[in-house]
Image 1 (cartoon, rainbow, N blue to C red):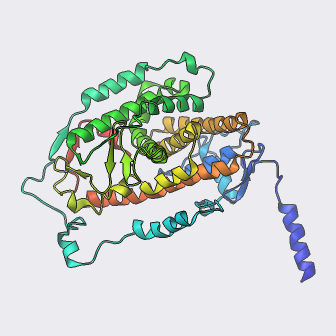
Image 2 (cartoon, rainbow, N blue to C red):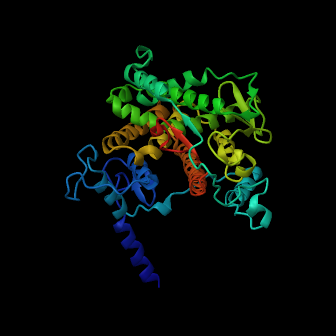
Length: 424
């Protein structure tokens, strides 16, 4: 027994790779990621591929044996992913809860979350036939089964095209900053407009309020994207595609982060969510007019549109615990917005975003070094925990949106549906 154990240990020692080299790109390694010794860039690449819902990539040169160059740069996404898998990187090695210390309150929230999110359709007769707490789980028909409302945002879309084409940002003051720092400055400028006192509670959400919120959010992301020199250099068609597929995800996470900050500063309550610079909602009091986009009433849709779940309130508390600074939050916004929208984009824009996200990862590394945060791996894990939980909660929302489509809940036509390709 002792001899065989000794032999096994020797074999393992011989099989171990160079502890200083990434197994994927042969550049300096950062540590163990998803079951292999890799650098941060290759780990981030594998994570993006895991969460992408698009079809598998194809070899750029149709050989399936591409290699990285001397600087560790890959030109072929498929061959890079194949090497990741061959080196033992697995999706089940993605860890969602890596922090060791938790308060009892956080622990209880984690225990309760699965039961809340996986709540099953009620089996009682009154619920199945239409209770005030849940949607009536039968498709609702009318004599005239046509869309209720047509929303025309053609003029607004033309305005966004002009904004993305010409930009309205003072680029001189941003010239010496990295792309990540430029976008962080854009985020800070946007958040500086937030009214930190005297927020007005919106107790009833009308069509006008909803459409105005769409326009404000799209405008905010258009201005934010224009802070990056690299993004501004893209052709206008690609910039518009990027805007249309990222604004929903970006504003969802940014508003969660702002709500977290406002709760810490006691400018809003634990049961409230800051939906704009001027307005907040209270989960227990706010209702909405749904007659302009659905034949169901608000009370019928409460199961599918629970406000706490709709605004990812569980994640707000995670952000309060971590409290990311503007640069860290910007990195999260970029990772989620560009990563989750990637599968909906053309191949040219997907390729650009792959390279851009690697550049942002390097910018984050340099930012930590500049701030003398040399041991920042724990901080990265905390940020990625938010990333992972956002994806999980968003996927649960997507399942409910699919139920809505099956039941014919949506009855709305929009002049520019390309702005709503990615529902968050």
